[in-house]
Amino acid sequence: MSIAEVNAAPTRLKGRFSAMVVCWILGLGSLVSWNSMLTIGDYYYKLFPEYHPARVLTLVYQPFAFGTIATLSYYESRIDTRRRNITGYTLFFLSTLLLVILDLATSGKGGIGSYIGVCILVAAFGVADALVQGGMVGDLSLMSPEFIQSFLAGLAASGALTSALRLMTKAAFQKSDNGLRKGAMLFLAISTFLEFLCIFLYANFFPKLPIVKHYRSNAASEGSTTVSADLAAAGIQTQTEDDAKTLERLSNKQLFFQNIDYMLGIFLIYVLTLSIFPGFLYENTGSHQLGSWYPLVLIAMYNVWDLISRYIPLVKCLKLESRKGLMVSILSRFLLIPAFYFTAKYGDQGWMIMLISFLGLTNGYLTVCVLTVAPKGYKGPEQNALGNLLVVCLLGGIFAGVALDWLWLIGNDKF
Image (cartoon, rainbow, N blue to C red; front, top):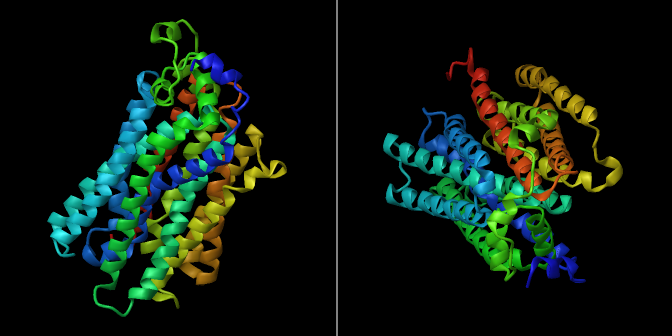
């Protein structure tokens, strides 16, 4: 079948709901392993109490994620998106499986050797994250905004799911021997299965959906070469690479400066979020009535509201599309920094739960608004490139936020 036949086919809109479900699952798989690591932070604090695992592991993760996505974005137009995404999900699968094997091999004991092993696998998570997030956001940017929204909702769902499971496993294993370890192993086993499911869905099911073939065929007709392998997997003939080169497109530099406010906005969203979540919640919120449940409840509330807020833009009248409005909203979030500081110092746990819920609500809502509005008005190859550039800024914001998170330890006797 040729591209023209796919574009003219009356069935091109079939499979929209299936595509949204698969995008949601692929989003879930993009962060479920890493969110499992964050959610079982109490287990790693027990194994490595002197090494600040919530902060150190996040700091290890981010340079590899940011460095990889920056490199991939530079060469984005030459990279096979299908191979990139499958490689990313496979790396997630293998790294998560190796975390289970490492824990079994060391019998759940701490020590610097085990900690270094965990850090190496966390670095692999960072590389996988860059492969998948940039690849998927770029690929979905040339499709329907609903697909990006579903993918981003799946990202948030990974946090909500792991938080819910963590609370259940803590309650179930609280009185048993090695309860923390059993819960952690259950988490990692579930994550391993979900990563394998993502490999199967992306490689065999997603590219064959009629609506996906339609969008990718349109992108190929506009000069995109990154979709060629996925179209070939669906049995569609594409134009040659030489033909694609004759079609003009904006450079990455031009795209960046045309969308500088979106780039800065997504960067600032995650600078703020990661300067608070999760390190501040584990080490700077003090002791309260909830005891060891307190940081888990805070993380769960953040994840739940982050997930809920990513569906709000589906209601058209509630979606913020104004460029000025988005920037004002993003900058206003920085008022949360003094709010968290004074609440941790003087407030009760109820106020902290309310604040962390608002942090999650604004994080998810603004992320979806930026990533669905920015690609409008561009051709397929440019949308793919812009999606990759936005993920570069997103991961750059996370990296900066993780580094700034250490400032909360100034004057803290744990530093």
